[in-house]
Length: 213
Ligand code: GLN
Image (cartoon, rainbow, N blue to C red):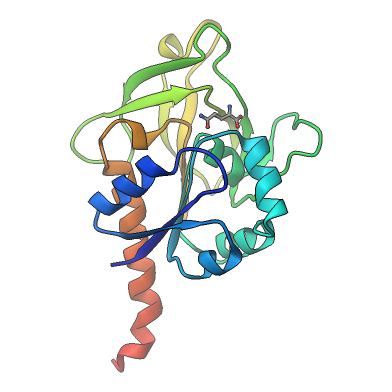
């Protein structure tokens, strides 16, 4: 089984570890570069993206993370993690950086005060078996995506709140997946399973040359 890490500098790690275990992955937390080296794939959890940004830099994890992400490591970013995987933040607060990897611009806290947090059922491309129950907590949205980015889910304008059109809340670019919602909070592991499957495929393809076949 692939080893899937959860970035554990800040934010909700426990539910992700449990979901990944239910998907058959070996799991570990990642706080140091050496721990990052051990994992085949990584979850970047929700939390506060400015804090996570500051801590990954303080822990000397920012560069190693950028390298792994650029090098094809499968990853799933949820909420603040989606922000970290974005190449660009709309009007970034002073000094906030992202790790990047997905050619998109995200808007933080994109659903306004009236709908700070909300839940809805969403069809997600690539997830079989019906809609995913999506929990949004001060969630971002993608306001612009590049041509290499596949949109996996949108929240309809009526649900997204007053003055909002349809909004992009899940995307994929190669092995990088991002959701504005928290798939770890609904007890539905299908989004995590996408990551674990992607990790299995990566492990299989990197091991192939050593199989003597
Ligand atoms: N609002 C947070 C941010 O901008 C994200 C919230 C979350 O991860 N639940 O970083």
